[in-house]
Image (cartoon, rainbow, N blue to C red; front, side, top):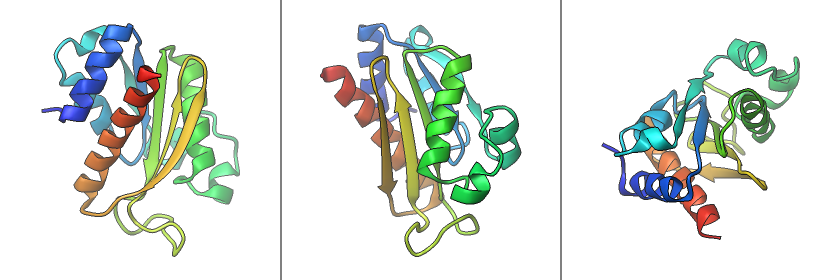
Length: 159
């Protein structure tokens, strides 16, 4: 069942007649699923792609060779390129990309601990990029990130 924030976001997207797509890494498709669980989501949800491994990011999303090695897969620049490149091929009014660290063993560091999530959203007239730091289990981090994305989209729709 979708959270109240996701439900409110979907309703606002439906009212605005905006479509949405997702390109996910850390959330591994859960964001797409959450938005699909809302009544009438078929009016707005185009779909999405899970790009967990570096090879998918490079091969399917055309992240330039060396970019991930230099910046890591969980970085603002990779998240931005994921959103922009996916949006070029799968048209929607809103395109959300999400990467991050939900468990140890990735590119975490003192300045980028587990719980760091990068979000990049392409809107019709602008793009926004935000870095979050959440606490909790992997699932709790992902749920918080999805609600944060819903809030960001709602804020933009209300402008």
